[in-house]
Image (cartoon, rainbow, N blue to C red; front, side, top):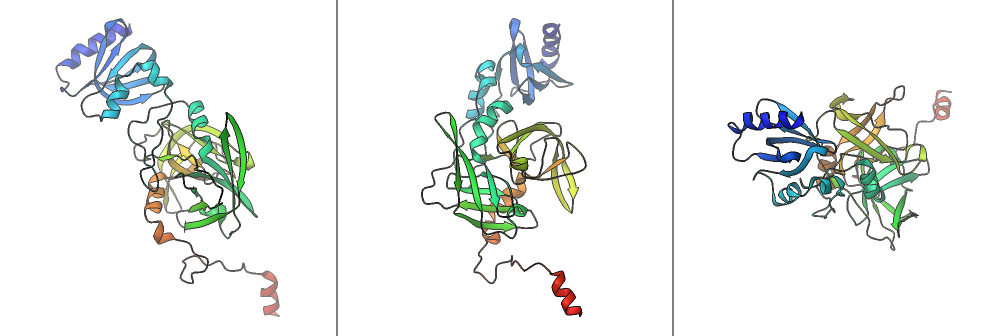
Length: 329
């Protein structure tokens, strides 16, 4: 039935598809010509001109993309589908202060991505609490939420290094605050321990490129349970809360998850988790990665210096009821 449907679609679409069209070769020597709209682990969505056809991965032999793709995309497209489905995330190459992933990153499963990216996700500890974070480059710079370290200067970071297939937990105590943005709830830290190694880090993706309903997952330390992975979908990209737009997701977010990364299925960070609706389930929120990139690109404007009187953040002692009562008397 699938073969007959596909052959009819190919004939109908052949007259209206431009020369720069994608070709999906199927089993039994059938093919579909159209524009690939989305690739999922279980199937491919193709626009054939008058309708969109969803083709199961099990029926695809090879995908040939049009000339609009770059060299890396073409190489991935012409590879056998079985190999593409099992491919691991492409190695991230640092091109600047942080890395923005290219279009060549293949789709993968949560299981493979969590194993590949887990080392880059950390636990951020302070005397008053804890949260999560993630490395953005190999030099020990990491992102977390402002509220995770608010009012704190004594910060430690727990990193889980992979050694010979096993996890080695290590705590770094020399952590410096580099930049803060209270209103965006973002903080940039750096590990400065002298014997610190090069760290595994993750690449920034694009929340704008996502569609509502796409699969996402988060890694963090909810309630102190480090390296916890939760999976869900993107519920909306434009949830307005407190005058700011957030990504809403069904991936479970709990206290301790704050500051951790929200990933797409290419292993790219598309948001920083920072809150949830406490009286509901599946109502988590994340700061879009576009806001994170803006913060990092303009980090000098948000630079933190405890000895600078012009520093925009000056912590004051909390109001005391005792002092107020004595003053009233």
